[in-house]
Length: 122
Image (tube, rainbow, N blue to C red; front, side, top):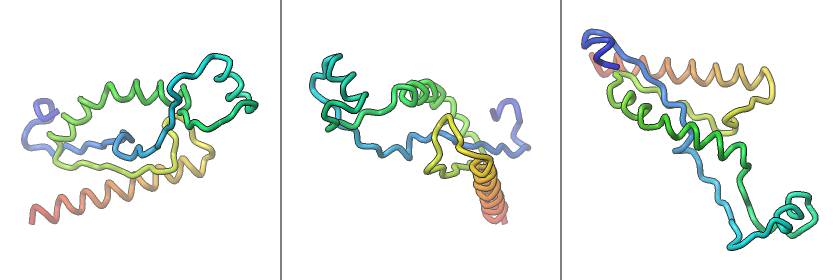
């Protein structure tokens, strides 16, 4: 990024990955047959295990591939914003209020980061 923007410009980057915030504890069975899996998913069998959603796992795996580039951009940025999005899912918002809350969080974080950047330059 620095090679594109040059040394005289300020680079602002945001880190939106949730990998630092993931603290889910899953409980996987040693062996789970297809029959037991189907019964468990239908709510008939015992549900002693905590298994992540397949869709969420797939999306998180796709997003993880971009983490190396994200880390590089974060190292070269003058201002780095890492908003905390606890309570929001990766691929779904429940309402327009959620969208507005995300915008509000992002705005507050970038405002604080810019203020801190200019205070550190004084």
